[in-house]
Image (cartoon, rainbow, N blue to C red; front, side, top):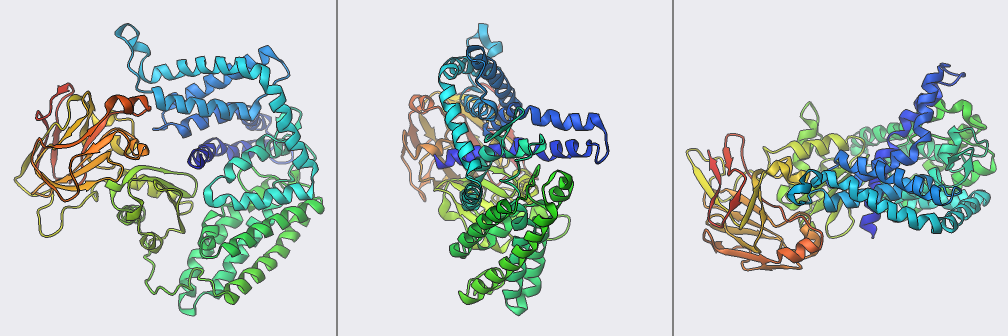
Amino acid sequence: MLNFLQRIGKALMLPIATLPAAALLMRLGQDDLLGIPFMAASGSALFDNLPLIFAIGVAIGLSKDGNGAAGLAGAIGFLVLQEGTTAINENIDMAFLGGIISGIIAGLLYNRFHDIKLPNWLGFFGGRRFVPIVTAGTMVILAGIFGYVWLPIQSFIDSIGLWIIDAGALGVGVYGFLNRLLIPIGLHHVLNSLVWFEFGSFEGATGDLDRFFAGDPTAGIFMAGMFPVMMFGLPAACLAMILAAKPEKRAQVGGLLGGLALTSFLTGITEPIEFSFMFISPLLYVTHALLTAISMVVTNLAGTLHGFGFSAGAIDYFLNFSLATKPLLLAGIGLIFSVIYFIVFYAMIKGLDLKTPGREDDEEEAIVHEGDDKYNSMAKEYVAAIGGYDNIQAIDNCVTRLRLQMNDMNRVDEARLKQNGAKGVMKVDNRNLQIIIGTEVEFIADAMRNNQSNVGGGSKNGSHGAGSVNKETTLTSPLKGTVLPLQEVNDAAFSTEALGKGTAIVPTDGKLYAPTAGTVSTVFPTKHAYGITTADGVEILLHIGLNTVELNGQFFTPHVAQGNTVQEGQLLAEFDVNRIKEAGYDMSTPVIITNAEDNQEIYSSAEGERQPGDSLIKIKS
């Protein structure tokens, strides 16, 4: 459940990313700025259609490969749900929640049916074209249900929202505390979305953020208190950590934290700062959450109101200055909080001897990545630190975090990650890993996906790498089934060749055989994937199905162990094809050369049926 909610939280970031553009257009078009009506109307159009935007964005965010077909299904699902429920009862307005529900259902249906095969006479509607159809049918059923049961739910949600709003200082204080406290597990996005887009109503606009830009004179209570923390408090905390650092490390720490402080002040992106002390001292982080709650309470009692399209940084502060209530007083409160943050952080760090940046006992110096190859260099280090590409199931990212699905969490080297610039490392469970990097995360994630030259890198102990000259290696089919080009595999980690080159087979029989002679280098604990290294150093990954690590070994029976020597055609494992399919998993089985080098030519067999032992891949060096 936690993992699912985190996926929703990450998916929400895609539609939320449209808000800065909407707020910028709306504000610049107003009479008190540029006075361009069509610009203001353009921004307003985005706010007016937020539920539809969320339906599209959440569907794409939850889909396996971010395909636009999921977004189309989300839009269709929302329109069917909205019009269907109002046809039954015109007082129903599912609004923002309707968009999220539609997006979630469309994303899940896409993952389940995007590769469905239909009879030949219905073949045109198979695959991704089937997703909008099944989504529309599902939403018709839900519209019929929600049309009769949603009003009590809607009234309950409205009552919670009104209670929190009417609670005044208490309500905003509790929100501020939970907002910071949920950051480590990534669920603050879910909480924010309810407060910013659902609670409260004003002339058709719902939520504190939407109502603020719609001109509601009472809106902004859940945003104003963030400005003193993000613009003033956390930058002051950075100064405290810099001054508390060891003298010989102060300049290095100053360069790091100074940049993070400026980012927080200008944009309101604070996670890189918070993760720099979150796990070092939970007490210090809880103190930060309490200070955030106090800021929310103080700004509420002072009668200040302010809002943002992205976050509580200086850009939003000045852009929306004329819409705010007592904005100068808000800045004054921020200055006071900067003093409080500095004193509290400095006293706790020194008094409790907290190992904040620059105070660590470990003398190993941090690695500084610079130049045009910076992100590629960091990507290589991160991949090596988490056990190589064969240990990665999927690579994803949000605004500040790498979100990875791992095979073996025990292979993750946290110290090496932090040495190469990671602000924090979170092992959400035994499969999901988050690496907090900052606003550069997207460039590093792209480099990790695209970088193929460093995958594997050859064998140790003097054996020849996969790039040995004048070599030709033939891999036979490890399965009975149909060849599927790697580019058509519905998993970006494989289809983009991020894990290496090769092909895939859709099995019709549940037996996996060795495609060549070699040594079993890996048997994953979940029994779904096997690695073989040949005498010439070619490293092969056989991955039965997609995302089947989630089965935790159920339906798989290995017949070899790590370190065994195997011959071509030897039985490696058995698995129950039908049971795995019934559990909702794609059986496409990639056969990957994980240490393929640029000077190699890899030829995969054309599409068609294959029997175990048939030629499948030729590697020429």
